[in-house]
Image (cartoon, rainbow, N blue to C red):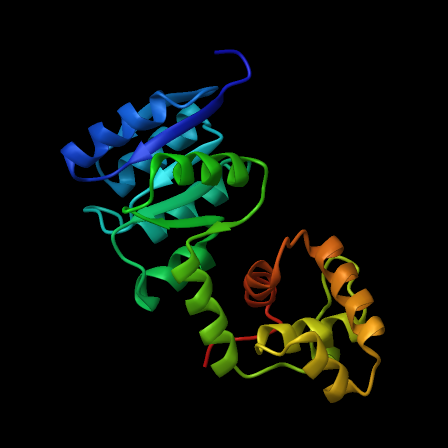
Length: 220
């Protein structure tokens, strides 16, 4: 299994946990290195085994998935967390993402989707269920923007790029951003391409998540 993606499964329901271990174990070039029955055990195993990815349930005894995610990311920053849960409500979604989860799927996801998500988060990319992306965009639309000059800009973003990113997070199209900032469509497109390159975002939904993570917009 040299070079295999090493995955830890954490779920408090034994039938679900065993099913996930079997499913993930059948994926090509993927190795299951452990299975945890609660959040505390997930942290313990993650810090010991140092998996590439933890497949994390959220609502577990002893320690919930969001707090377990935070502790895993603090203690083993090379380990990525992919949430796989029944819940896609805001009370579950935002704490998990804010704790450092890079992926979020609901349990109706198929094996192909789970495999894509595992490979994406292992590479440091974000993978979100479409319903989760919609919630992030909706939250951004309702969130207050922070003036770019009040924020320490990350990843080499310029003040103008940060401003464009904030407007993306507010749900504006390129044309609407151009009108708002009195720029040409070509200039806005150039800014958007540079934002994607600097932030590692592949699409606007990932850019929205980045804006939240870096404090460019905040939830009200």
